[in-house]
Length: 229
Image (tube, rainbow, N blue to C red; front, top):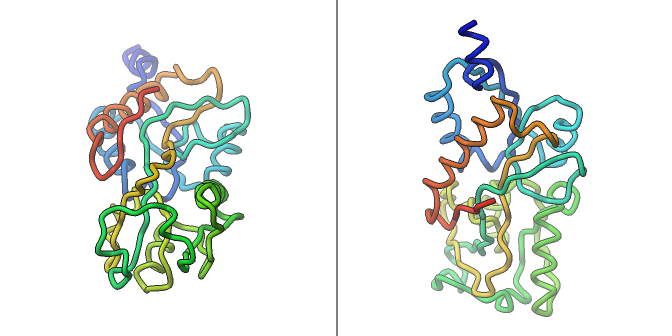
């Protein structure tokens, strides 16, 4: 009877959680630490997945909840924004712009850029191309990559500069300077997703509560701000 009550309260059981790679050097370790402290009897099973993979896994019941960047998705999924992740410009320390703390997008015209892949990172790619075209230029591509850490590494190597999610700062790549964007493009939304109607399932509910509490602690740090849903 006691175990049944604990299960009903979300304090016992197993929770299958999908996550994007970039969350491992941001919010995810803090969520795991707090969740395991508060709910030691709930087994967390973590699976790294892309955003699209998480969408499919949620619909098929492979995972219970996902930590991802919010983008268009199947209608039978619900989302809860948790954090805003603003875009920054990453430049090699040797670059002429490295002496600045902020830059206008128009200053990037003609610069060699490391771009996210349209196939592997369609959200980043489309947002970056759109913000550049909005100020009158198409990015001049020096190299294409898929993962944030790869893009940051190529910038460090001097391949080019990049427009990159601000959470990349947590990687602390050597030889890279991060500049704020004066145009203030719309930030990326990091959040949770689950199958519609399942949000109040006890274990999902407590995971959501823990995530929001951690996000509130991160508010204002390293360019990542809390987003209320």
